[in-house]
Length: 67
Image (cartoon, rainbow, N blue to C red; front, side, top):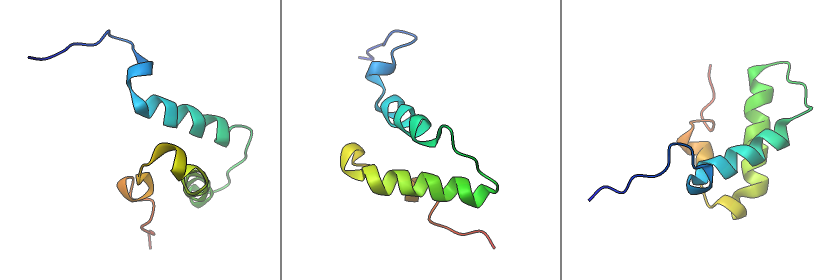
């Protein structure tokens, strides 16, 4: 049986907490290249991996470098 959630329920979506923290971490920073953005995201997850227990860097393919 499907269980439906309310249309807007961020407290039930774990990704909301991760992206809220990421947004706060990245705020008020200036990025000149996409590599700067990727490095900032990598640093965020490396510093906070104990909180989220995610392997988001690999999932988002941020561990692969473009050539």
